[in-house]
Image 1 (cartoon, rainbow, N blue to C red):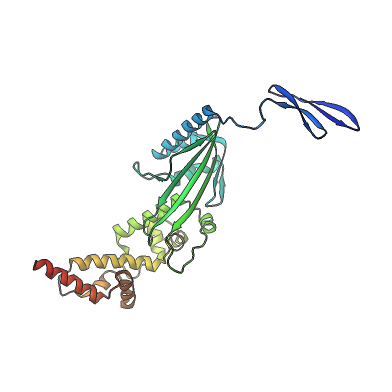
Image 2 (cartoon, rainbow, N blue to C red; image 1 turned 30 degrees about the vertical axis):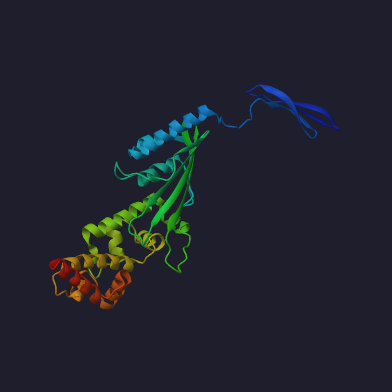
Length: 310
């Protein structure tokens, strides 16, 4: 390459090696130089590159779907940079294996809910999906998108963005969940696993029947830290630990009421369901049903009579 400075100090040629044809002169003020045929860093954004990107990303997608950890890792470029903006983390190749392992589907038929088809543009693919969490009040989900850049047939850059979408309680403003999630090492996928684990633990083990149940015990038996479960309940699902537990107790009691034979003693059913305070039970019951326990039991009795005497 020859660069000529045209100034008051004369013309001074400078030579340097180039690896592509030089086509034309260009003038930039007093700087005059040859430009190469192709820009130095411009990627190939043509149809062939787009097709190659699509093939790589589809292999990546299938490896995730089939829980092929080695397959996913083999598709990462040695200089991979994975940016998880929800956690405010940047991971290199040496950190990704554990991260991917913790985020992979747990069952072969488990799938993300894609909100759009995979879109391709040159060396980059764009994916949008959502993860719905169980156990929240109303709809709770994470909306996420990924920009995946391919280089040399391997995934060189992943920019992952996610935000929590929740029906906020009236008069309750939602705060940012990202700083705490970053400290606790929780991605949206990991939070969805936590919510599912917690829900299944309550359904199968029925720990809420114990009036002395506490957060520490739940966290230990679910395999998470106390802070992680607390974060999931308060910041993601939008309720306190005791509210979550009392909701489970109430669902147990309502199922028992439907099977009970009159006369029904609701107070006894409440204590059997794990409530250790009648005031807490009455408050929870009215908030959920809009009725007092006595009025609700009367409705059940009337329905039973109507069925017996059509």
